[in-house]
Each structure stands twice: as structure tokens, then as C-alpha cells.
Length: 304
Image (cartoon, rainbow, N blue to C red; front, side, top):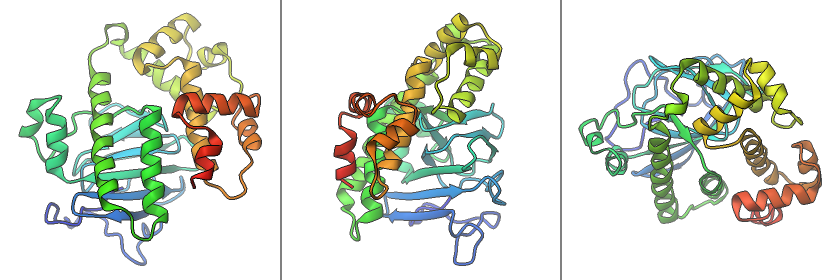
């Protein structure tokens, strides 16, 4: 996730990890699109890899869409669960550490955008962003809505399979996605009186941890409340207030976003995906998918 943009906007420091042939990071951090304005890459780091816990400071400002759940802790901030319902943000030089959540380690797509574009985007919500061009993101993470999640996956698929990606499409799409996700991050960062207690935040992160690990299971509200040591009423209330999702909707979003990855596999069976992810039937899966993404699973599969 930490490669520099191909421009004079970044000069590598001696303490940064170079990604080159033979590097330990050669196969876990791969750039799939590179232009002067936008760089896109994939990060696939097993939990037992030497760089899993600490891969060094971010060498550029990035926003990241996780595929697998992982705990992230930015230096000087509280740890949080980064899952497929989350966008994570890294300023240039940001130090952070990971902690295992998924058995598959840390898998995500990352997007680096020229600093002047980031600053201009953020300044529409926070004029003071203009004054910190080297550390523009004031938040470590924010929400990811279904439509934007699908859009970034479609952009990533385009640059991954096309021998000559459409630069105008890619750059315009990524800048638009940056605007949408940061608008949601600013809204989510606004004070919420119902969830100011430290204990409430810890309960919510513990619930997100459990759901991210077990989203294919038929969990009950009591199952989750019991594990996080909270009443079912209080958990349901503060979770919705903090995340904008009910627990059921949050779990379903993780199922659906996992389905997007499966739909790219050859000879995919939609009924098999539905049952593997915990849906009661193919029809239930298809209707839930269509309501979330505006497309049916078969339409996404056939566009691959």
C-alpha cells in the first residue's frame, strides 16, 4: 500500500521499503495502474508474513478498501476494525500496525491520488485542509457505502484485465470515489452524543470484530451481545448510531461484498455462493444483492 506516485511529488526516504524484484514485498504489494494523477494497487499480505504486523510508514496519502477484516492501529490513535464496510486513510509518513482478524491476513485495494487533488477535495468540507497538504486526512477510517464499494471494484477490475486501461475513465472515477468516501468520513466523524462513552466505542469495535470473523454464520443478537458483554437493547442502539447500520444490515453488507470477489471466479455457481455466505436461498441472495448494488449477481458475473 505504500508505493510512491510516479511524479516529483514524493522522494523516497532511506527508511522506506523499496519494492523491487526479489524484495520480500514484491508479491504482496502490486501496482496495477500508474499515471501522474492516480496510482492503484493491490495488497495481499498473509498473517504470517514478516511485513504483516508492521509494513513501515505510508509513503503517500492513500485511501484503502479492505477485502478481509484486520485490526489497524495508527500511531497515537485507538485501534479499529478495518473490514469491507470500511475505508481506511493514510497520510504520507503515517506509522501504523496490524493485528490479525481474518485467517487470510490483510487483503485490500489501495488508491493514491496526487496531493493537490486530495487537498482540494477535502477543502470542500474542511477549508483548513488547505493548510496541511502533507497530512490532509484528519481521520483514520470511515464508512463505505455499497454503491461506492462496487464502483471501486469495477475500476480495479478494469485496470487489472485491460491491457490498455482507459485513463480518463480511471482517473475521473477515482477522483469521484475520493470525493464520495471522504464526504461520508466527515459526516461519520461528526460528534454523536449517543456514543461518546469510551466503553461504547469499545463495545462497537468488539461487535464489528465478531461479525467480521463470523459473517457467514446465522448469529443471533444475543450471540453478539453475549460476546461483547452488553445488553441487546444497548448494543442495537449504539451500533446503529455509530455505524449507520443495524447489526443485520452490517453483516449482510459483508456477505455481499465478499460475494463480489467470488463472482469473478471461473465457473461460479450462484447458489453455492448464496449458501456459503449464509443466505437461505439463491433468490434471497439475488434480491439482497440487487437492492444493495442496483445490479443482479448474474449481471456482475457476466460483465467479468
